[in-house]
Image (cartoon, rainbow, N blue to C red; front, side):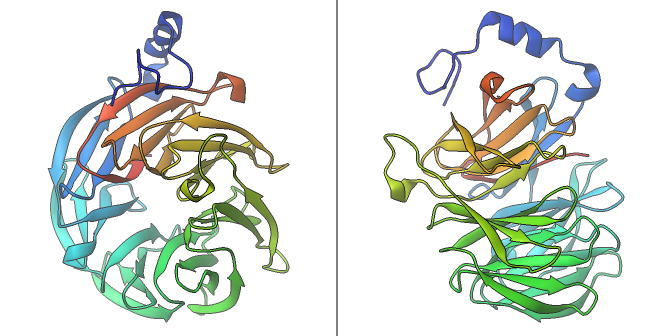
Length: 335
């Protein structure tokens, strides 16, 4: 699906907009964006300068979440049907090794302080902890039914795992490797994102169509809930899934699934500021390093939408649609 010159984009990009886009600093444009294609068993590599796919990497079956190693040399890809984590060398863009992950790995996160990968094993109701340097399982942490989302606090103290069927966020103390708090957050919680200072965690609930915000400093309770309503779109199609929060504490972006929208939320007031039209069944999001662009994976339309998010919310607009593989799921930008 192409955005430029069609009615599927919220604002049609003008030639002036494209000219500004082409003149962005080289440092911003030299990034690589990785997209996991769930049905093709591939990872697409998008060049940040040309905004075109420049490489396709063959990986295991049903790739979904991705994460980088702490030294930035490898990209980890959860390949669900192979029950493994494929490890891609970022210099050669080849899978160089795989690590058994437990049943049905879906979301993975890397500990900021040690070589651990946290894996939500959906069929086992556990979170596996893997040491990617020693290539061994460290431990398994019991959580609720059908764990999905994972989020690690910036200081590496807390891990939150969401369970889709239990409708809960399980707050895990990473010193003891035990779940110490359990909070109801809404139907089918999908994703977890911490604020930059680690004081709050945002948890999206897909079927509830809302985001719960958890206090991570004192009570560990849900202190606010954000609802979404897109004019002309049935409530059941407004499904909160992937999220990204800007590091300056200004904006949050929430993917709203089959509504084909990304919500723009004020991080401080929790007010929904706008809804941006993107591709079909938007799933996950990634900000580039300079936080000037947002990339969205659109599963049904098989593309990635590039959104300019510089300046004020009134300036935000989709500037490009990039065809990738079938059913793009995850997206991550090289640091």
